[in-house]
Image (tube, rainbow, N blue to C red; front, side, top):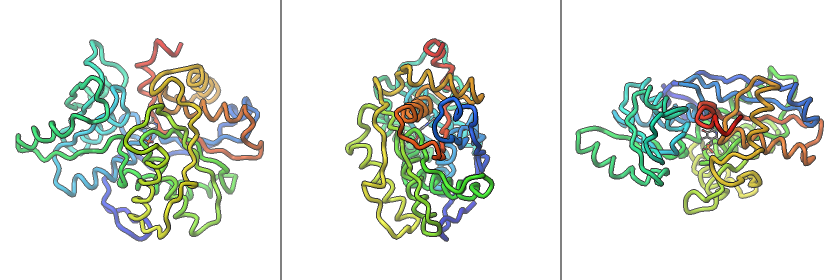
Amino acid sequence: MLQKINQINFAKQSIGTFPTPIYHLPRLSDYLDGPNIYIKRDDLTGLALGGNKTRKLEYILGDAINQGADTLITAGASQSNHCRQTAAAAAKLGLECHLILGGKKPQNPNGNLLLNQLLGSHIHFTGDNRKGEDIPNLFKQLTKQGKKPYIVPYGGSNELGALAYVEAMIELQQQMNKLPIDNFSHIIFASSSGGTQAGLIVGQLLIRQQMEHNTHIIGIKIDKEQNGPLPFDQQIQALANTTAKKVRLGKAIGNTDIRLNRDYTGDGYGILSHIERNAIKLCAELEGILLDPVYTGRAMGGLIDMINLGKFDNNDNVLFWHTGGSPALFAYADQLI
Ligand SMILES: *Cc1c(COP(=O)(O)O)cnc(C)c1O
């Protein structure tokens, strides 16, 4: 199918369930005695336990199908949510799926690793290489076998993936009519490969051409180490600019448009501290909402800390954008309770 954004048609495969719900979290807001907290449930995108990669894959796989691909290749950490959603999307569209995962083959796969197997993907374990270093070799091998492989970028973060979060921002704008508030003062979420943040920023600027809203879009930086040649904020800015061109925004994204909180990277990617544990426990016990140990636990932990530090006004309306990941809870069971 084709999806119109800013009067331009983009190829898209419909693989998720949208719009995702949005609602107030009264018990968490009361408990923290700060701003009103709302949540956007992109953990409920409907594809094999959901998450933000479902949105991105709709556009990336729209392109893959147009190019005649019959096989997908992608890479990630061993508990990658992106890889699990790619495996599920491949199953749904009848494509072969190869996952290049960091780490070693475990004796008892659990969490996302278990799901990857159930979803019928071919898994290649590559030790310390969790960012797709081994993709070119596999691409050659599969091509030699007569297949038409398509590389899904790390974290689904290219301009096609980001396009999905431009659309998500338009979806949010349409949902605002049903909420008792006019606008969010802040949108807070986990930011790791940057596609979600780049898309939300471009989406906001696109919407703002029609409405005067000034929402602070703040990514909570998840990774301690730098991924790629550029510092993370510059990486997001570059991706936002290629995405802006794609939707003919007619305006460049400046470095002040990139708001990133770097305070919660802790001891590194996937390493839990009391920040994540406390956030996971509070959301579960007060709202019945499951976060995840790597991304949303850290992002919500950051939001809670920022509230405790007095960074918000009690009249503020803050949207926490839940990006998924809860299957990884099972893989971290021994560290959670
Ligand atoms: C991938 C992922 C993110 C980060 O999104 P990016 O677009 O890569 O920045 C956040 N939360 C979850 C659960 C994820 O799987």
